[in-house]
Length: 414
Ligand code: SF4
Image 1 (cartoon, rainbow, N blue to C red):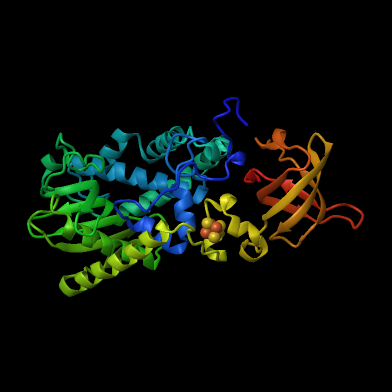
Image 2 (cartoon, rainbow, N blue to C red):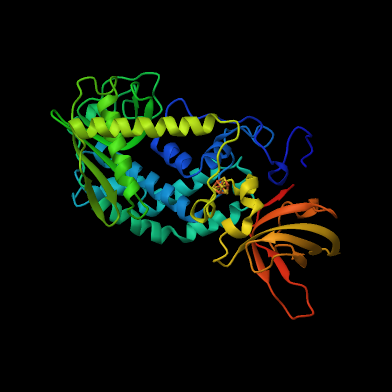
């Protein structure tokens, strides 16, 4: 426990301080999360006031996801600068000068890593692995630079109204919902749309408005999946329904998914298609709202849902049958054990009660991670602990199996 008795550590925080209902404004990301597992969505977005001040359970850093965020951020910054400088594409001879003014690709990426690390300074899951995460991200700058170049090379951009970009009221900004007004002709970034009719919202990467149509583009660092296309259709629904930013109901002329491998055009839903899509999303939204209003929120434990679940440490359903829902096909395992007695400064005797490894039960030796685990000093005899991402080693028949904590291991004392 921390010095302040009102505060808890990650490994002592088992329940939210305040359960979260479905958000007032539904987003595609939340809908899909809650459809996969309502309990995961609820746990992830509830309040843990004894743990930290932000809403939600702290996000666990994931290198792949962080690379996506950094490349995405860098791409937006560069495209925005290019448009402001009236550069039409990466092939434009003036593009190099604009990029140089930003310090080059590597500088933009390096700054984005610093910004992200700073933003996560109060995230206890990030803090405990921060040095190695930052080191790993820096080592990936050449790879990110390549992704960024591919992403930017696939898309021409234009700005028919530079004044719209530079609007002092921030027409292009996602965070300006206090002053919402029609989007002018031109290219806008990070636009938050809201449809009062469906109570849906979404933040769009790029919205290019011309006199007779609007092109919506989304930058993707992940591989193409069918959900991306559905997400774009929700953007078309939002653009059509946002009476403040699109009062003239300017139609969507193109929906573009911009991947490093190229641009994928998504069919624009019009008239009946759009109405049918709205009706489908309304039904799905109601189902999610209903699930999240139940006294016992349903869990959907499936290997594909639980494997990368951000809140699995808190999920009793998962740990009640970790063998069935765990990954058990990778290198690392998840185990529940009860500590018995200290064996040395770096090892404890313990007894496993369940796991998704080949071990079902029995005595083991628990070994500290060489780089240190923040919860290690808190271990006492007789504590039952959920542990994720441990390495299970079967040794000589006379030796007890070894459970080694890794840099990724997290614990919950139950
Ligand atoms: S571990 Fe599985 S069942 Fe539990 S909240 Fe996560 S996804 Fe849902």
